[in-house]
Image 1 (tube, rainbow, N blue to C red):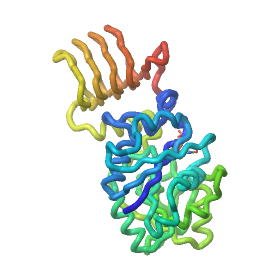
Image 2: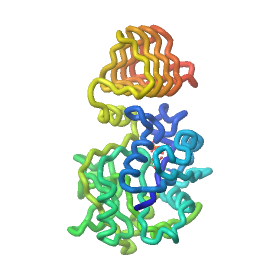
Image 3: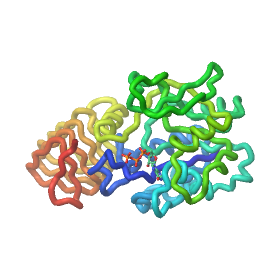
Image 4: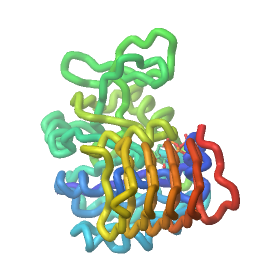
Length: 323
Ligand code: GTP
């Protein structure tokens, strides 16, 4: 048994314009918000209570997830008036958990923009076997120059937390899923802007804290950029496309390129959809052609429109180029 905190309050700047109306973790990937994929993984690992640490566009989460009963998990919401950074957000969210009553029950923290198929249950077991203060999932990448890297000793103990560099001393990077002993929370100041990666972890390592790296080379993707978000969606789809329940698709429509179609979407005759992410309740008129486009929920696309590499939403009058 464990409790969880999901960090979902960032601005998602690298994903603009997709994040102008939708927080990054609520963007659909293969028909479901990124957060829902994570919630399902958390539930499978035995997490019974999950705090969503929200800030930017916080109001978008509650109507979708409610109290979590639909998924059989208890969901609580912590809202930061101004984003407190990843560490400050964890401290703020933990206020909703009764830490004293948790005892040794671990707290699992998730970066809200990661799709990972590693075993959270195994990570928790590893953490408990080491009696660690904190255990980070580490993943090896071919080129670690774009990331901070995390060297470990032969026992798996983290020896340093290093910023981006031209010659990284290891290819192991922080994969954005941490198991904390509840006592670690007290080491993060309340109501202050704190970065868990730049402040808390280096201070823990420097102060002799028991910080461990759990290495599992499972499917892993940070969906922080438009290209990565589309890749994440395609990676989850077998076949040409995936459509959620309630769609009406004209038999003459062609849907290819591992496109993802949300719930209750209507697709007209002669439509071509290639490598697109389409939200819920979208109506696509006859003869429309879309290639590598992101269509937000509830958008109406009139007959004959042809677009490539664009973001379309009812809230904007003109489609915006996708980088
Ligand atoms: P960029 O602006 O494109 O870098 O994206 P981001 O704002 O989401 O930042 P980043 O990718 O570094 O954040 C990692 C995870 O932490 C994401 O899931 C964010 O939603 C979350 N996050 C980042 N900063 C905060 C914060 O201040 N508060 C909360 N609650 N979550 C945060």
